[in-house]
Length: 166
Image (cartoon, rainbow, N blue to C red; front, side, top):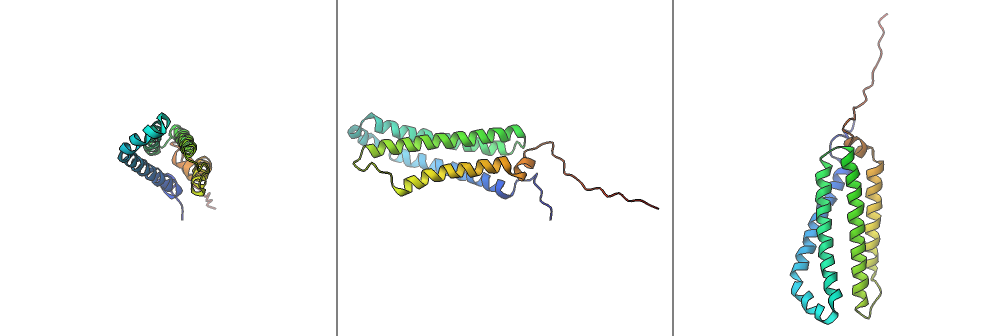
């Protein structure tokens, strides 16, 4: 059975689904953030301006993740090498921004309490983000399906058989 790598399928389809899930998670975070707005306002009086800024940075983080994942999904249907290059750049950018804001927020918020040690789930979450980036990036770089899917000039090689008539 011959695979058609010019169609969206396999792990490339999985990558697209994960980007869509990222958009949903981002909207969920925004929903929770706006729902907690009054609590943040009251807590910022006690904890200070930095607490409120952390809240706004987390909202910015969610917006960046949503916008980046939407851009990746749109670019996936461009099917050219330039689009693939942008997909890789956006993937790395949104992951690093998300990582920096999340770790910064965790560090700041843990400094407000007497318990300044991260929980195991916090540490695993941060490690998971970096491992996920490493795996997906390597997939985008090394996968034959990705290379064929985003190569607009790719032509399927056809075996030729020489027949001689004696």
